[in-house]
Image (cartoon, rainbow, N blue to C red):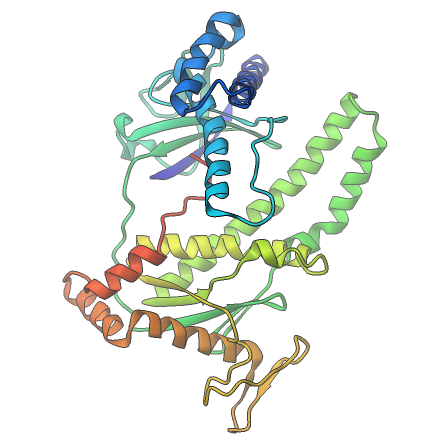
Length: 404
C-alpha cells in the first residue's frame, strides 16, 4: 500500500460541508465508544450495526456515506483492540484506555461515496453532506493506477488547508545494483548519526531553530479572548508553524534514509526505546526534535523497497565496549573519545557504530550477507537466512498518514 496526497481546492461552502462531515465522524466514534463502555458492544460487528441505529435516529448521521460511518466505528474499535492487546501483554503503566475524541481532523471513505473525474484532476463526493467536486493539485499522477486499486479515500484538515489522500493497493519494489557495502549507524544529539566509516551527519534541530517564532506565536494565542475570531486566526498561524516543523523532519528523514539504504547492502542501527528515553525531562525535547524513530521507520521501509537488509541491534554497551579488543571501557556521556589499553583511539560514536555493525553482521551472518550480494548481482533468489532476517526486521511503514 502507498498513500498519495493532494491539496484540495474548493469554495468556502464546500469546506464548511467537510467540517460538518468531520464533526459527524467524531460523533459516531464517540457514540460507538460509549456503546462499548456501557457493555453493549462486544465486537467490531456490534459497533458496525450500531452505526445503522445512529443513522435512523439522527438525520445528520444519515447524510454521511454508509461506508464512512462504518470506518468511523472501526476507528473506535481499533482503540479498544489496542487497549485489550496492552492488557494481554501486561504492558507496564497505563494501558491506553480509549478516550473520547475532541478534535477530529479526517473523514475516511472506502469504495463508495466518491468518484474521480476522467482527467484525474478532481474528485466528487456523492454523499448527502454536499461536499461536491474538489480540485486536486499534487506532484503525483493518478493515471498510473486503476480506480479499483484505490481502496480508501481520506479528507484531511490541516492548519494550511484541506488535503485528499488516496490509499493505493500496489507493491513498490525498485531494483538497484548491489554496492557490496555495509554500514552501522549510531544516532545521537550532538550529531544526527555517526556511521561505522566515521562519517557524521549534522543534527538539523528544526524545533530549536524555530523555537523563538513558536513562543511568539503562542503568546499571541494566549493574549486573545477564547472563542474570538482573532484567537482562531492566531491558532491557525501557530498550527502552520508546527506543521512546517513536522514536514521538515519528515523530509529530512525520508531523504537521509533513502540515501543510506541505496548506498549499502546492509544497514545496522540501534533498537532504541524512545518512549522510555523521553522520560528524561532534560533531554525529552531534544530527543523528540531529532525524530530518530521516524528515521528508523523510513530506513525499514526503503529496505523493503530496494530489497536491502536492515537489522535492529541491541544498543546495550555499544558505547562502552572497545571495537578492537572487546574490553569494556566505562565512560560518562561527557567523554567523547574512546581510549582503550589496547591502543585503540576512536571517537565515541564511531566506536559505537562499529560495534553496531559487528552485531548486525553477527545477526545476519557473513556468509548470508555475501550470498545475498551475489544473488542480487546474478538475479537469483535470496538465501533462506537473509530472507528470515529481512522478513523480521523490515516492515512496510507508510508515514504520510497516521493510520490508513
